[in-house]
Image (cartoon, rainbow, N blue to C red; front, side, top):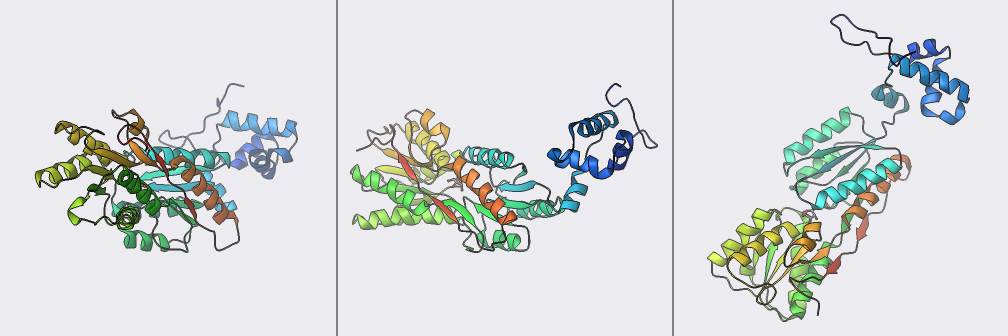
Length: 348
Ligand code: RIB
């Protein structure tokens, strides 16, 4: 019998939603046998399973995910919120989330807030409506607002990448203070004494931690922390270009640049080249993230690697423990940063 030759239509021509009851009738089995054939194949005979599959195919039945999730109270869906899908750091992290979720039989709903905190509220409400089993969350910016939104939900949650200073929510991040400390010490080791630091948005904890690491390295090496050598960007390529142009326009001298993420740092490198400043001969440059572009740029960028893919994988393992474990407290995970030296600031 050809596939779905049995059409059922409402008035107005829209197909009627085929129910599991109709599939059971069509296959000549009970509703529970259909449900087992769909959800626990090992619990029905091959002959019965084939009859159910044939009926599903002929009726063009699509199991109602929401009905199933309401019954089992599990949607097998994880909500994932990221702040900037355009920044190459995030797709790798999302890939880690997606691959691991799939490995454990889960799907993800990916939402991009574009740095807008009000979008976070929209997507968190969406996740509630869709009955997701867990939420993995990277905040857009304002820590307090994001945290209060998250804490309104009783859904298991994990914070990924950008910590929110709430120890009750398991968090996956990198030791950003250590990463910035390593980058700055590397430049000091190359004899640099006036290192320009381009920070990310100051309302982000990862920006504050990297600034802290930069300042710690200067202080420990008995170098002054000059406020004019600390400037801010928005983690974008253009933000790095603007930050560097402003510093040059203000005639602030520097002998190295450390950018709090690769996209801003690459933007700054573009401006350095436009002003004829040689890298690394005159100015040495270090970034943060180790996105693919960092190794493709000319000169290739020395940077601090964040294991974005592995962070995504870990966040899924953590959320699954939160969903399935009766334990109320799950330890957070802090990954180690790694300095990757390339042409823009060669190794010692
Ligand atoms: O490049 C984007 C930045 O924001 C990265 O450093 C990552 O930590 C994210 O939070």
